Length: 117
Image (cartoon, rainbow, N blue to C red; front, top):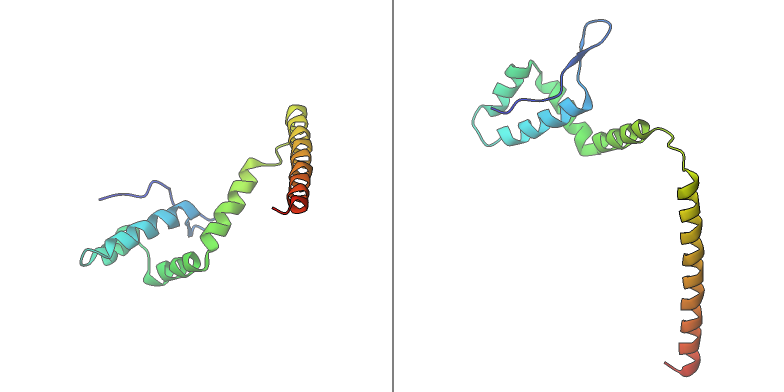
């Protein structure tokens, strides 16, 4: 039996709070439990969840809410990382090179057009 590595938290009022990681891991187990008879009911009993709770998680996953939450959390965890001087210089150099190459391609296309391909 595979167990979920993310701990269930508690709200200030004492209710269980399920982090996104728990929900994702539980739904992976839920999908895998479809293959064995009574597997899903066993999961519900083992983690003390109701079918309605899991149904809500399934709808959220199908709507793409989990992906949006994970992207949002990842962006928050990175913080507002500032670009240092070396990275700014590299970015400026790459932009200048990109512009130079774009002009070169435009010239080559114009020459090719004139030459009649």
